[in-house]
Image 1 (cartoon, rainbow over the protein chains, first blue to last red):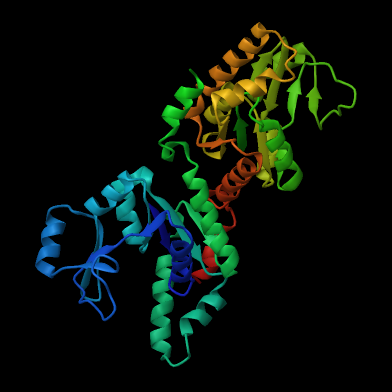
Image 2: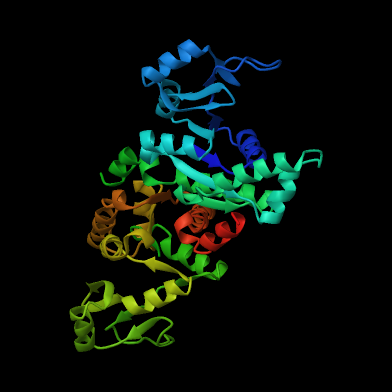
Length: 199
Length: 199
């Protein structure tokens, strides 16, 4: 379980998409949501769509690894779906905020690798949050406050990568993923392999 | 502290040398030894040379991170030397066996990254241990027994890399080192950097 978090405007979405496109062994964790399906979205690819009553029943039954309410819609990671995938040796990418990360970590401790992306400077973060320059000062200030609130949780992550250059940052994220796959505890075939070496 | 261990005949020395040659930020940990200096060796580069009485006094005083006796000679990693280097932000490569690794880990827990290299097969290990084919069956059997004894400790390491191809194995080792440098806890500048982002 590979978790990417960052304040908005730090290039996380671009990096997540490239990772999913280039690495066939990692899949995006598909969430359950109560948000209505949008044109072009596919059930089971973009989300598992459901209604609030069913979602709340799943919460009650402890069927989520993490869940949150965002702008009135509920989003959650279904435990059974992830556990079945992990059992088959699949890796999952999670694009969640620090609260989602904390919930995932509490439930799946050793299996979670937490990566936090940081902008290269406050000036650059400000520039990215301004977008096309059509938003009011209040809207931009609100974005900055949310970004800084997210940044304040940087120290609950395993790895930190600064996105000063998209290409380099992507390489750093790939490097972390590649190294974590070399962890002894994740190479399930080693028990038999070393037994063979010691025959 | 980056520890490489492997049974002999697994290419560890080649990989360690390449890493030291290509990466200016990691230095080989220089050991103290009671073994006599050989021609071409340099005090402080290859070893810190000393005598048995002084070595034993250092053991008594707890001045070693790890030490061992090999074929009648004493070898040890001096604590002060490593701690001073780490404080300056230097990384150290350790070429030690499982016992040295265990001692290092007990004393410096979080700072130690333990990597174990495995041969690709028992047949290949046997081939490599035979060397030039001039050794007796007993000598080769002894080497194999020692190699297998070392392999039996593979599961006390953080990472395992199989040396089926020297180039790929070297890349794996470099990847682990690069990722470990991205660990939050090792990026000491992040406290000030994130404080600046949250101003």
